[in-house]
Image (spheres, rainbow over the protein chains, first blue to last red):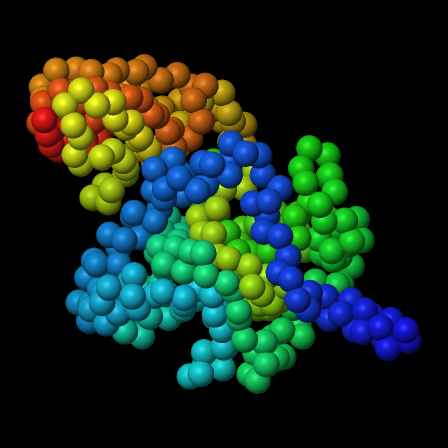
Length: 252
Length: 109
């Protein structure tokens, strides 16, 4: 009995479910939205995925290379990649999400300027790359070089923030599945991003969503691609272990 | 813009007389004209005004849009396969920009 209590408290302390994956945010959507998300012909996020497919084959920069020049067919080379991000870059030791990896490729290999975060081009390529892993379970590494980033993300997730003095966990763990005004609080998984949010009427990155959350609790909004949001993204990916990638998901 | 702005999904083949479903999406802001920016200036209306579809040269579908339609409009409609031919989808917006997508339907007996 004591051992069971200890186990439960350990699981709660790490905040990561031990066995069953958490339900994706899609579980809380209406039947209409679920149908629209599943239908590639109706999901507006697919407009960005198509654009990403074109960008994949477009030569750019001093190296006159396209993504396809090195990575060939994305449906083979990028399959499963999104399930492993964010990931520590072995060269620089920095934590990179897909956006960061794409921009690193642009500067290192294509010899051209990075895409602006949240630009249509970066969203399109990110969504296209993530789409190649659709349906595959997320399993980002949180040990080894990723451990300090994971710990930082975990601390941020449980840190009370802003004028409302709320942590991420107080909504997305303690009250997940309950209503916040007209919305249902999700478990705060990033498995559908970049996602098409009806509120935005466009595709947006996970960091844009995190900024909305920070704003919601009247806290400091960190920057796009900031170390804080990257660490948080890794922690969310750890929470989403085993949950299928759904990019581009539709969210309210 | 050189990049694809629109997606059309429909079967490439159909039997004569068969009803097929055609689904279209176009990327467009669909700015209503009722909003103001951060300093209070009016954001001008900027919307898709019309979608027309021809099949083997004849117009089979036409729709006028208003500011009430959401961004990135999705339009689906059925059509009856009559003969092999091209379907040409043409969107026109309030700034006169035209986006065209051409698809071929092969009809078998």
